[in-house]
Length: 243
Image (cartoon, helix red, strand yellow):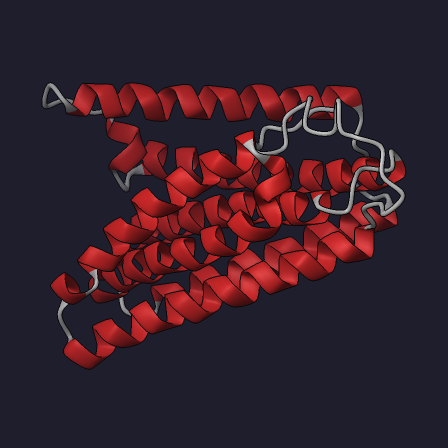
């Protein structure tokens, strides 16, 4: 079982205790819906704050609280899966603050971009879920290996770019809106989208293997991580095309 999602690694469901109260696919879907609702509540609050004040600086503190706090809670969730029924909702609330702040910044620069990104994100989620359930997309070992390798390569590029920024340099095609910049963003969006398919398959495998009930929350958390990544990459892609 492979996935490029750091929250749903190959060892996620290994070594879990036996339990009579087991994880189900419907349970994981319901938990995912709950986390999405929590994320939307706080992101809408941050978004409303920006439009009320018409000042980006008003949302920046909450953006940083959400980003740093969400990262810390995500790490806690990954290393303490049994805490996921508590930490996953907290992560969703914090990530909502970050998403709301980031969305406000993009909307200020490119009016109308957020509704496009939201629509494309949920549209992609629905299409891929239907494709997976219908068997149109076959999750073979080669498919998994290819997506995991591509996800790792993207991660390395982003880390390299972050390191270069400390010395005043950057990788041009990551940020520019030319042909190569847009092509790179399209590639990243595609890989993020296919990671959703791997997450779907991973959840199915977890339910079939009789994972404990709390893994519904953990699986929902992992799926939310990928969905947030997809949304942010779609925002970046749309911003590049606007330029």
